[in-house]
Length: 68
Image (cartoon, one colour):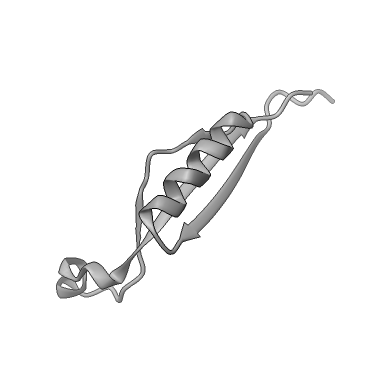
C-alpha cells in the first residue's frame, strides 16, 4: 500500500477581526495556508437572517499538505 496524498485542515472562529488577522499571520509563518474565507454564517436558514451582521462570526480555515 502507498499513501499518495494527505492534507490537514484546521478551522477557527474569532471574536474580532484583529484576532483573526493576528492568528492568520501566525499560522502562515508555521506553514499553513489560509483559505481566504473571513466570515461564517451562524444564523438560521432564513433569507432575512443573511442581512443581519450579528449572524456572522469571524472565521478562518487553514490547510497544509502533509509529507510522508
